[in-house]
Length: 82
Image (tube, rainbow, N blue to C red; front, side, top):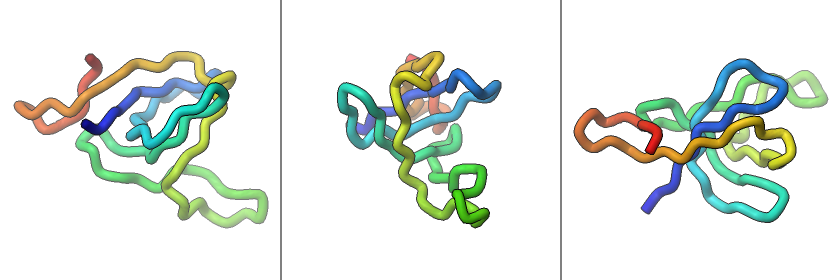
């Protein structure tokens, strides 16, 4: 079963959905998705000023303000918090 989580970082005001691929003691690894489950390219630019093209995100757990587990609603076809 695919695991999802709604993530709110300490330095941001918006939350985002993450399809979790792996979790370590220090990090969450996953792909950012929209509420309907489709992958999105993360916002922002890298250190060279180029737009991000990598969909996989590595997030330090110390930077997470709130993490809410979620699941795909088969009735409505979108992600909901569980």
